[in-house]
Length: 160
Image 1 (cartoon, rainbow, N blue to C red):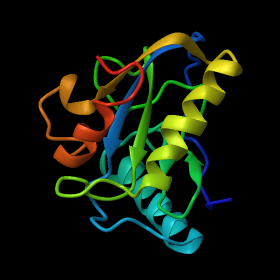
Image 2: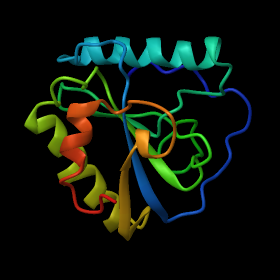
Image 3: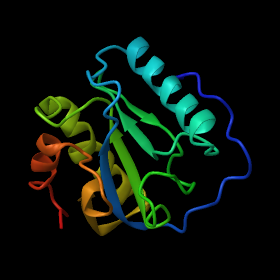
Image 4: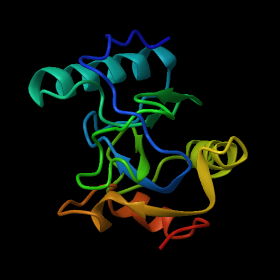
């Protein structure tokens, strides 16, 4: 629905269920997108950057969360992403659109992942019931997912 380009190459399948979720923020655009049109534009721009500049096969994240009430599919449930170097086959990468260094996403946007996406993934057998949640910064040298979003995910079930 967001107008994705085709995947380049042959996707590598994940071995399900996975044990981890890695939370990111996209940083750019800095402002959260608040309409489907704005979020779809951000998704297409992100995919162009990941494919054309970074040379990846597709958008790196498994899923991306807009502040418009939607979770957008990147590589999805079944394909290895390019979101958390060294850990892409161990967990899903979920990116929130925006820069969440100073302020977190709004409560409804946080709940899309914490209360909807993650429990759904467990019920569907795509994520282990004892999954772990980590911020991208815990897995590499980065400030991602921003200080404010990181403080939020520290309160989530599964955070380690």
